[in-house]
Image (tube, rainbow, N blue to C red; front, top):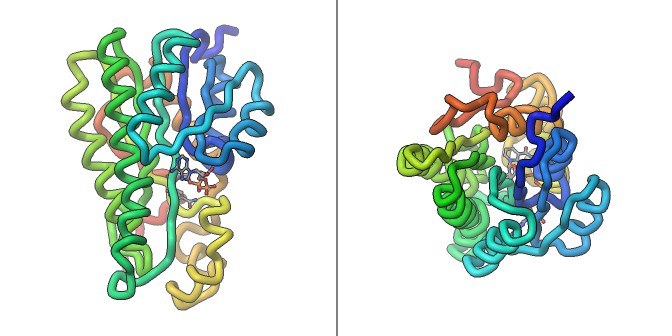
Length: 253
Ligand SMILES: NC(=O)c1ccc[n+]([C@@H]2O[C@H](COP(=O)([O-])OP(=O)(O)OC[C@H]3O[C@@H](n4cnc5c(N)ncnc54)[C@H](O)[C@@H]3O)[C@@H](O)[C@H]2O)c1
């Protein structure tokens, strides 16, 4: 059977672990040539070594020169870029009134500036080469408040907005741009902050997650949608933020 992403070239940022790695793995299994990028040099090389023919590259998405080089090197080595998945992200837990400006800026610089830079540089090369698919990983926190993660939610709302604008600006060049908005997914981003999140939520994580979305999601449950959005099967999908959250945002009090 022909794989749906055969001969496609894909970059995934934040791919050393978590959702980014799960997406890179599924893209690779669907036939794509995948470049995994991450600020964690050891982690990204180890992650790439687990996937057939994949490459691991160090890139800090906050730095425009590094993102431009990531894209240019991928094109030079593998050919025109077909897919960009911007999954690199960070989070901290702090109420807005206690938030140092530096901490606010740090989260915004990875979670919003980083996605902007990936969209910009991928969009530029894709629009010069006949098109492609850009997939930005946002969050359900783009759509509402969430105690102690105001910086993160603001960044993710920004990601949804820039995704829509990029989709309109790049439509004529054949570039589709979409966002995926996961609910709570069991990765280090969540599990490493369990105690802080429980304190902010005022209850056990199991209880909070149970009320919100039944259970924690797993990274593979995000990866399937990413593969679909990367492929030409989603050719009429652009400018949309797709929620994958076990129903968390469906509920009213
Ligand atoms: N886990 C969740 O519940 C959840 C929910 C909604 C959205 N998200 C989003 O999904 C994406 C992936 O998160 P995850 O849960 O897999 O987190 P994770 O912590 O498991 O992985 C994040 C990856 O991003 C990398 N990274 C951090 N800063 C970077 C930088 N400046 N440049 C390049 N790489 C960098 C890290 O090294 C790490 O490998 C993030 O954008 C996150 O905001 C996660």
